[in-house]
Length: 238
Image (cartoon, rainbow, N blue to C red; front, side, top):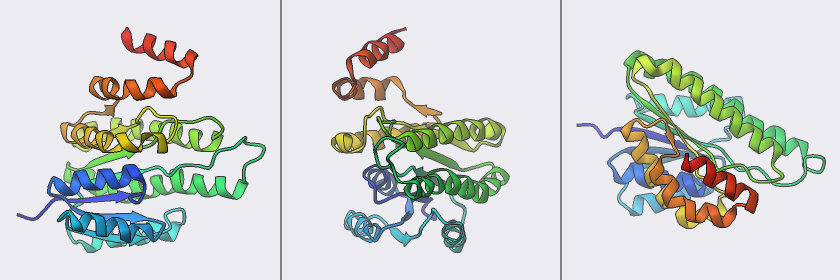
């Protein structure tokens, strides 16, 4: 039987790499994508683990980049079982001080390319009544107005797609680790990715399940300011 096929965007980020490992070690053939040359290093790491993986460097912030990725997906000549779409991280700073071009690029990467890509792959998943989409994003951190807003957009978009696909057996899962930023979380990323993978396979809609909360609460507590800690505890003990 053919190996199932998964695509992971933003695969050279920590969470992207960890998700790729999860899918690969669970028998998926992978196409991994990112805008940097690091993607080929990621490919090597995965191949050393015995994972069947193709890598593609594509600037998903551009229309052509997304179309090229879609063409490459079609070249596989078989159904896409899963796509994991990873939001890129923004650069911090007060909005009045940050670089507009970087922010427009971030919107193109996190928002525009996500809609473009899902627009291409979802009709086929719907018609097949099969397929899974995993959206991942790190939690907002201070001074990232545009990045944080892009994550809210993706969460809202994912919720809508999930509802539209309920009767078509296409599963949509949203993975949001509770973290100030990704770097503090690197040690926990393998764990987060494993939970994300399991949730996707189980058809869970939002990985903020108790298991994830309990495991991450210790870490989250260290990162959260006092006020947020009380609210965090309060909201999760009701």
